[in-house]
Length: 515
Image (cartoon, rainbow, N blue to C red):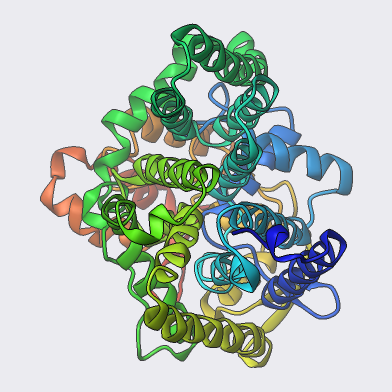
């Protein structure tokens, strides 16, 4: 039974949904901004894409002038935003607010088609208060997920030709941000085959439906990628997005199966306490909840559902499982957070199968949501912070080490100065990275030709400062696989042409060129 069946007026539903979206936006805003308008430093992996976008803004092109392993969507999006508003620190944080609100709205739209009453709002609120808030990093993952969830929402009501084309378009956009999202398109083709058998449709109708989905997907993705194929060539694009990802990307332990269950929030750091529930819940249910659904769908609660709701639940679980497959080769907690929304919808449905379990578990879930809605913003606003007026705008720093680094470099550099080794500093202070890569790794992730390119550019542009983080010298994987560590030449080059200018509290270093 759906909310519409309960006699709830559609206008009231829209008002409640709007209130949930606005509440979520305010909740996220208070974690990424210091009121009224000072953005929090955009640290983490998002700084890579922000840095890439500034390079695009300066006329460079991904795969041709700098190396990266994802499809170009995130770089292009930030480049367009920088073109419109300037290179400002508030842009990625504002995008997190917009992404969070949009995903809450989409998840509510999905949930209302398989859940009844106020519980339909629970998966979205759990998502925004737990996994999303524990990974406030505006990378390609969230953009790809948003488009994928939109495709799922489009198809839940019906799988006619028009909706299938639109779902294909949205998945093409998702794949433009993250190439692995193409797997979800495969999942939808599997679902359509299952549904054909369920409805007794002709094979010709199935072919037409599959063709509609693939037409929307291939046309959109091809249109998005055509410019880059034209400019850099298909073989080079294929190397970075497929060959490199398969062959060299897993060289780092955090890019392969070893990353599973690592990165647990530390109890001694109170600022991470609120990340513990997300870490525990998501690791418990992804992908286990899909296995439980296979068992539960044959029970009495399943039989009480209408045929339309049953198909919708199967579709949610198929998309969720294939979303999991997009990150299964390197299931870091952050990647599991990103693919969690369908699992949260399924979990909420499963909890409703047993009346006693439903009462206890749902009360606990609502209690966690309420506590998180109040505690997370409060924790953010009362913790230590410092401010810097830098080229990307006034910025709030919540990490003393990052504040120390950026302040030290800001006092000794000017926008457009050449620099190498730290994409966060390069973006934040608007410095120009000279090499094809924004940073180095002591594994096969950094190729020998990229090390050679960095050395040539350091010499050619007489780069004054080079950042060298402590992990380059003590990385465990580098010791286990010394044949993959290609940094010896550039390390020797630094010792010959540079001197140690600064060592930060965590051991990271800045080297300055000899005069």
